[in-house]
Image (cartoon, rainbow, N blue to C red; front, side, top):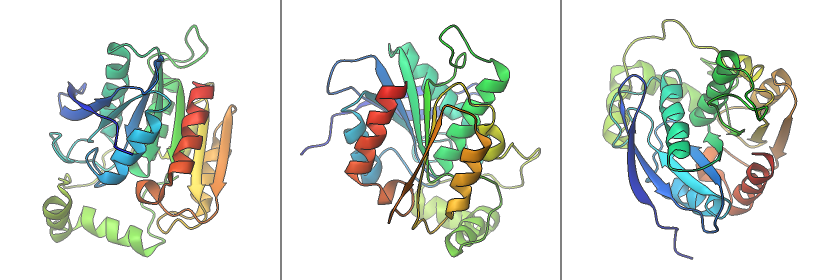
Length: 263
């Protein structure tokens, strides 16, 4: 089956970073827009992201984009901090082009950003007339999310920290993955995803995690889920690894169905 056609888009964040994006219209008419937030070193142009976009377009229109410092977007990656501004611009873009309901589906770093973004709106604006967050998403899905920062308990995460912290690692990420990473440390350190999760309600939250995730063990999923308030769901997926590359069409269809029913 050919992948759904996408149309180039572009928008600018609150701090004036140009974000490269694409809009894949829904395969069936509807008012649901789904913003797809990729993982660290990912891109809207990767085949795994494009396949996820195609499956989700069966449930709503999809806005996929490259976080700052990734692919054709401007700026440098802050690995989950200022990326909430990128996601916020994508959500507002989805509303601007006509989607009445907007859900966010994030993977790995994108999942951490999705949780932080929804919690940010929960603290800043509170519920609007429809009981959801003013300006925020109508539903949030966090797939393979870290619950806390600086986790180094697995070999893949130690490699990620090397790429972020070492000059040679940043060079390798720039050359090999087209990811430009900002030097230095967070100041201040942003709230951890599990801390932000406490502020998402009454927006529905779905936490999805695999029991074979090689980056973040299941305690990350439980920590986010336990910190969040209702409405919330936790799916522990047997045999599922990490983020976009391990996601099957069946899992993405189930996520699309949940988003459609809960937005």
